[in-house]
Image (cartoon, rainbow over all chains, first blue to last red; front, side, top):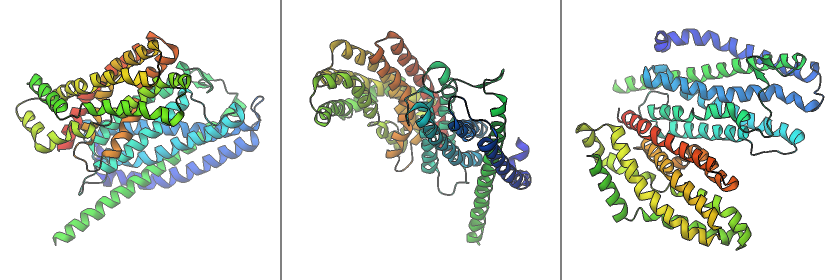
Length: 241
Length: 213
């Protein structure tokens, strides 16, 4: 990983990778969504409403994946003082929060026809809402603890908060097992899937597509932060004369 | 040295009057709630236990900006570190002092508050048992967030945003004990509390070191 400590070396990979991730992700999302809308059969129980699955599951996966990314970045920042880790933390936080919010919104829209309620105080919903609050806290702490003249990226204090918040992730993951309420249990496990193959394959496309798209957004944000750092450094040099 | 820090902080909290703030706050909320929903005894006794938990959670936010920041700014903590004390040890001592000035007054306040909210005796017992087990966790959490936000301007609104999501497990199990009347929920409150008490000095100490460089 230390090969990428130099931003220039990181950019040499990130710059060409960004359009591939971005447009590849968009293509896969479109393909998966169209297939989910028109090709797959409707569910025997939930009817047409099941099609929101192809958006809901990727956003949930990325909401949690985003915090996992923050945790990994925090460990790299605290343990190895990797210079790009703090930039990555700042780049991941906002998209992660947006995807978590999207997951809650799509879940709520899906819940209305199938469960008959917009919101249910169920373990998984509650812990996902908590994750959103944790993201907001992370972003607010990063803003508040950023000091004048710092390089772009989150402070070490914010990284510590990311590690504390990571305690919530296993709770979300196992919440459907521990509290058996309205939200269904795990459909997809390492041993296979309880979703029929005819309905499952577009989900693979959208999960992969949204993940690539998420990576592209994070790359773009990291590039923007790094560019801002260079502008700041140049201004400082110029002001010194 | 640890004992000296505890005694000093305790003396400051009780003499400075800061320790009575959560007590007055809890009583005030218990007095306001019947104004808001009406003095219906059944409604009050049903919701009062949970309300006391919320009030305790909010009361734990009150002392956060006085926990670490004054000592950090005046250089007391730096001096202690120069004498060879680790940040974690200092935070542990401060945490013990904070709980001693925060937990017992809150527990005492819960008794008259329970009367104001017309709680059943068994319910009040569960609330007090839960708070006795949960307040160390709340105190540790307040200390942790105080360490995370030390030295930042305008962190007042931020502290609530950072503390409350992390306090949710305590609230769920503490209020869950009221609903299901179980020793198991109280054990989970104790477990959460213990976890927070272990994490807070370690993570808070790391945050204070990170804030220095």
